[in-house]
Image 1 (cartoon, rainbow, N blue to C red):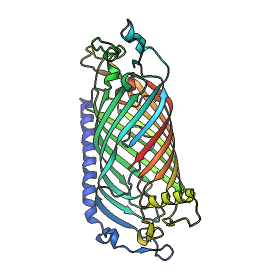
Image 2: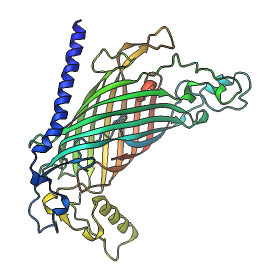
Image 3: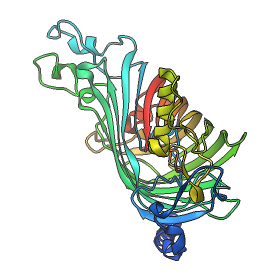
Image 4: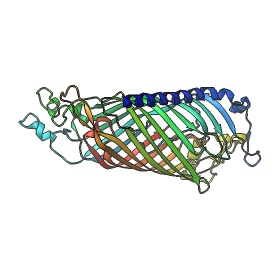
Length: 429
């Protein structure tokens, strides 16, 4: 009874906190100064060096604003964003590969025998899409916007094995939910940012992985993968909380960030009595070029192809038209990041262990293990920033990744490990 009362109290407390933050996110914009939310088009364009000092400004908008309240965590393997990674690693136990003479006796055993490393494609689709944002920017204190942002979170995570039968889909996870981002607007506190979310995630082992070789290679009826002791879909709901601290130095070209968080899992067949059910900690070191908005319209009549291409990339990332490339909005100017960046990131993810305990394979049940399954992810990424006019993380990234530990994907966590170098292409909205 004491445990039940504690659980009720904890859920009631979470409910009050989320309700209060949601109310504040809607009520606060009405208190903002109307003069600070004037339309951008009413503000004059001026040439740098002739303007007054940049002034703080505030506004609230529905939909995307281009202002970042809580930055993407680059090494977060399970955070919603668009991206893909290619790597070679040992096959997932029970994976079947193509063989010759598939109708001969023992074809299933031969198809399941080890055949060396496989080629994997790790794909994610999704984003944290802003619904409502109130932001406050003090250009002389921080590049990031301060304020509140309400998001819809949606994502799909998929793992394909190009050397398995039918280029098999090994695992697919689907997520839908929402989140609230917060960065304090009190001077001295704007280096902190907080994200609180709620989502439902379902996880599914791929059909090509679950079924045996007879499904594709032979004429017999499909049979279950002998290395899978049960078939289950341990979907869950989760409340993740992540706190981040970032700090710039070396003239704002460099910045460092540290973050940590935990997730409580609910409404799942997985055992989640122990709290937290999942936790993570990470760090990022960033170098960013800077242009302060002063991007020339052209590098000059004698410039070569490379110089012209670089100038075009820089100008396009500012969002300024060619004929206004040297103009900035004086009262909203801030020290911008430039078109290019380089980031080194690392994250350690811990997921609570569990074991299959059910006597009936059709009704899989689980019991909690003694510790956590860990996943390490380190990456080095070259970024092209698509929008330097505001604080947005909108960027394309080319990454080199190192992943080691249990699989980060849903039900695969209990079956397999990964240790590989990967090449990735990422897009952050």
